[in-house]
Amino acid sequence: MHMGVRRLISFGAPYRYRTYYREHGVRTAELATASWYKSSASAYNGNCVEVSHLSGDLVAVRDTKDRAFGPALIFTRPEWDAFLVGAKNGEFDSA
Image (cartoon, rainbow, N blue to C red):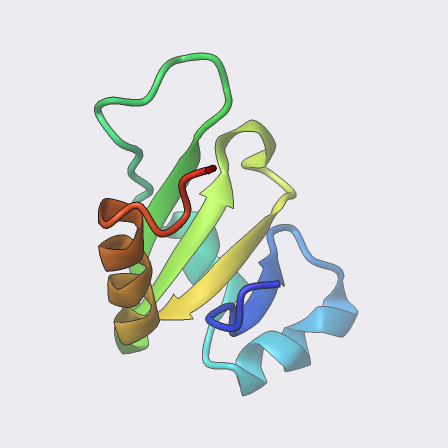
């Protein structure tokens, strides 16, 4: 797992996870009402991720195929920026 991944948040989460979310500064209600975006270059085949900028300088990333109940990876803004720089520089490309 990438060290930048701070928290794993699940939409429609059971009650037992609410305390966990609150402790990490992310409310499930915020995720449920967030504005999500995906790249304009993405195909419409369901193999995409969506990004949302949350309060508290956090960024959420989720799988387009599992919007309703799938998890979102939560990053701080500096972690997300570092990931984008790495992606643009080819750090994650297959050899």
